[in-house]
Structure formats: structure tokens, C-alpha cells
Length: 246
Image (tube, rainbow, N blue to C red; front, side, top):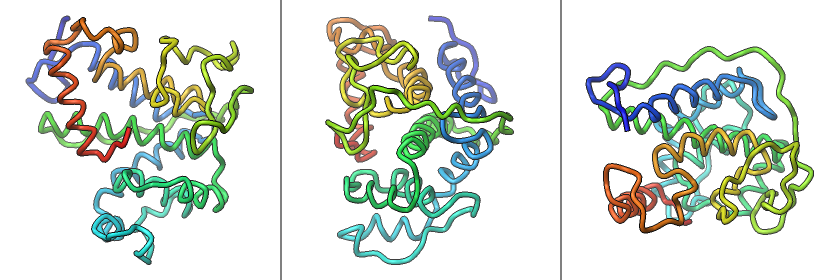
């Protein structure tokens, strides 16, 4: 696969990865399903700010996250529920619970906005981590695009197998747009399905860093410069470091 230097670096990177990053940032700036472009950029800024939050550090060090009182150090552009969601997902994702998720929703955050914010967190953290790995400074957040959110909710979304509603592959309809290129899509793939555009934005980026969906279950094939076993060892280590219980 062809490569070129990553912007700002001499390191050659696959063309599809560079293109995926450009599309990823463009997706953040555009109006989403429940959030405006301006609010999505505010989420991106808060994601970065959460990394240095002293309250988050105390929670992470505590035996129980529920034993820590106080407030997050935020930029002030988002409400308390949005800040709590962003900071906890960024700093201590391994100890989240359904009870915690419901407490965030009880503060007035809609389920759709919750899922969309989680999608933005995933996209921004992938791109920022990649930049840090190259030894480059963080990319300046782009200006938001004007426009209104679509406010589309899939008719097949229902709460059944997870804390929040999902769209099972058999319940997807044409108006949802493409979501499941692989009929065996696991629940990690379905996690953002109640906001189909967030699902598409996240996996368009994540698949470039891991594997295209059509190769996930083809364990005897290698489509990267390293072998599939090497890919899985790295993926497992990264998941453990990020407290991914999946």
C-alpha cells in the first residue's frame, strides 16, 4: 500500500490513514445527529482538557470512584452531564456502570447526545494518540461548520443487550444508512448504532488503524505490514492499557 509523509512529519504513513484522519476531523466539525458542529468542537476541546483534570486524577486513584466528591475542572462550554460523561470516559472508563450511565441521563442529557459524545471521544482520542505516537504537537481544533443536527433516531433502536439502545443488524432499515458491512458484527461494533452517523464516523477511522471489517474474522489472512497474531497482541495490550473490558 502506498504511503506519504504524515503532515508535519518525515514519517511515511499509509495514504488511507492520512486520508482517514482528514475525514475524521471533518466529521467532528460538521453538525451531527444531536449536536451542532460548534458543540461537537466543544466536546473535542473538553476531551483534551479532561486529561489534566485533578478531580479525574483523584477518582482514578480512589478504591471506588463513588467515594470521591468534588467537581470536574471544565472549560465551561458544556453542561455538567456532558462534562461528567466526557471526563469519566476519558479518564476512568474501566469502572463505569449502568447505574452511572443512567445517572448521567438523569441530569437531562438525551440518550442520543450521550451516544454521539461517546463517538466523538473515540474519534478524537484515536487521532490524538496517533499524533502523539509520531512525536507531533496536537492538531489545532478546526472551526465548526454551520448547520442543524439531523435528529434522526433509528426506528429499530431498542434497549435489550446493553445499557442503552442498540440497532441489531436484523432491525436496521434503509433510512439508517449503511451500518453493518459484516453480518457477524459484534456488540463492540453495534455500540454506537442508535446514532448511525456516529457509528460510521468512528469505524471509518478505527478500521484504518486496526483492520477492515471484512477481514476481522479471517484469522488466516494478513492485510497489514505485520502479521495477524502481531496485530492482535498489540491490540490486546492497547485495550488493557485503556481499561477496555471488551
